[in-house]
Image (tube, rainbow, N blue to C red):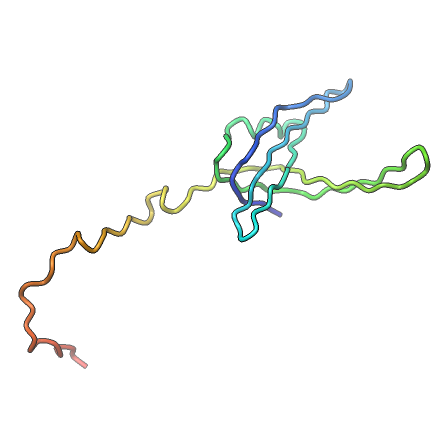
Amino acid sequence: MEVQGRIKVIGETQTFGNNGFRKREVVVTTEEQYPQHISIEFVQDKTDLLNNYQEGQQVKININLRGREWVNPQGETKYFNSIQGWRIEAIQSEAASGDIPPVPPAEAFEPVSDLNEDDHDDLPF
């Protein structure tokens, strides 16, 4: 699965426990009719993938949905979900990449001066 949008927040890397578990979160705002702010976590060596990105940048993030079950001390079962990123890449907008040249305004063109009204039907079919 993947999520596309603009980076809103990049968190600092957090380290937990004696085993050195690392986690870093990024919030991506989707660009759709009803934008969503999606928090995605990168763990362990994947936290370093966020070093080359900055807030405001358009990205595509490949994700996995994770779920886990937990039983609290009172015996109640709780379920938790997380969105875990494993790859991130920048998205270049078409206008910024230069693939599509900008359209000049109509004022940039000069009107035709040698138009002959008799040549209006010169099509061969």
